[in-house]
Amino acid sequence: MSQQGTIHRYSLLIEKLSHKQFPSFKIIHDHLHDQGFEISSRTLQRDIEQIRNEFGIEIKFDHSRGGYFIDKDESINVESFLRFLEIVSVAHLLTESLKESKESLNYISFEAQGSLKGIEMLQPLLSAIRNRRKISFTHENFETGKKRNYLLLPYLLHEYQNRWYIVGKSASVKELMTFGIDRIENLEVSNETFKRDKAINPAERFENIVGLYKENRKPEEILLSFNLRQAKYEKALPLHSSQEIITENENEVVMKYYLIPNYELKQKILMRGESVKVVEPKWLAGEIKTMAGAISHLYHE
Image (tube, rainbow, N blue to C red):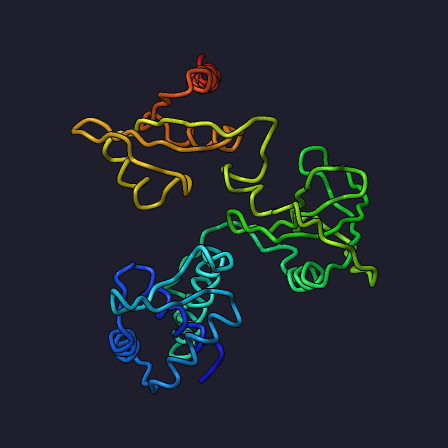
């Protein structure tokens, strides 16, 4: 079986385990069989072991419930692995469709986000992170258009809105820095290695924010009131992983978030227009009101 087919099988297995219903070995095996994977019990057991050993996802058996589950506390970045499986599975399904008919592309519409410039750098960047090698490059500032050379200790690759970013430490700046790879030129991976700072967890940089940049604020509770129509979208595609429903009635749904209220969050709120209202904190409600007023002023004749 092709590598894509194996990854697709992993995806189906993880999907079955993610529903927290503690499926038995037989239920998992039957689920894969129903999806077209006629594999032996030994192959399924090997799949479970490989997911654990190669990807750090701890699949365990709960004897009291008689089924398997994912121990997220002992697993390495489950959400990233699920996102990886999703991307590969979609690619596999599309590839199979194209094999059946080249005309399949006529029936697929992708979001118009432009080309994935710089994507060829993903492999050398990931290799540099994994092998703790210093990198150097020229980066163009998005706002000013000015270019500057950087020497970086790379820590993390981060994806946001179909764009990739490299996160790392610069010798001249104490805090972690984020660079869009689509604005990187002249990338060089050095043979010189560095010692990773164990006190730094770069993934934490994005835990309490929407988007990329933290700004000089601390996370706080944010309450947003959505009308019923918009609330359905928020439930299906949460604004942030911290989303929690506080109250729900025939008029509104109030949701709570724990976030740093950065510029990107304000943009997301404004994008939702009249379907959302900031309840708390009051200072954020005031800023959104001011920004909405400025938008309204643009259309005054």
